[in-house]
Length: 98
Image 1 (tube, rainbow, N blue to C red):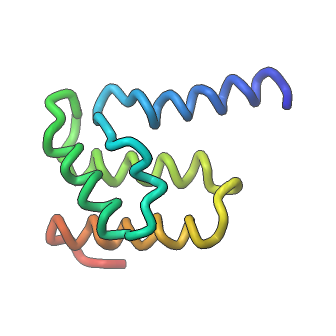
Image 2 (spheres, helix red, strand yellow):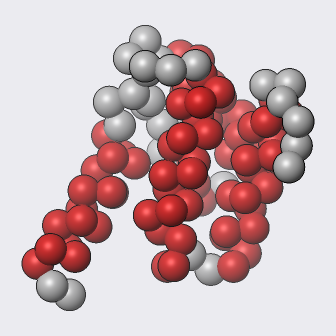
């Protein structure tokens, strides 16, 4: 692995673990239940006093960030759970499912 690639991997891992906007539950993205992922992200977003946008946008942004950064390394089953968590998150905030 090249130096730049390692640095980027560490950078994205740090964002997920130590986000300045949200304090995430440990291993939130490893949960098997999309509803549990969505509820955890919602709780983190609503509890945060450091986020710069709405709780919905903050939670969805963190989920999308994780999917985009880890995407090619995630098994299809994990991607499916996290994609389903997006719809669960939308539902929790009264937004239309996609």
